[in-house]
Amino acid sequence: MSTVSQFTQLTTHGLTCRPTLSPGRLFDAPLAELLAEYGVDLFDSSITDHGFLGAFVEDRDGRRALSMPRGRSEFERDTAARMLLAEGLGLEAPPLPAPLIASRLA
Image (cartoon, rainbow, N blue to C red):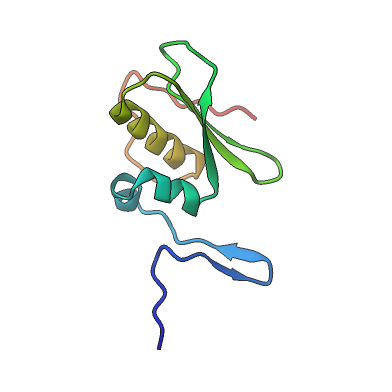
């Protein structure tokens, strides 16, 4: 009997089934692993405003991207990416600390 880990992506009849992302996994798993698991491309943003921490974008065709500003510390970039993933994927996560704001654009 084989065992399928929670990290395995299963595809049946063109449908992709992904494991539910728990808040614990969101904050503990390597970021690169989460991005690959949820089909999110990470790229550097050209936005240089100090108040911009990043953006999660999902196209109409389902493609997902995380745009992050350059020149930030690894800790800041990693933390902001995880918060944006939680918002973008609609996860229940702790609220963003003040003065951070997540904005949704239609």
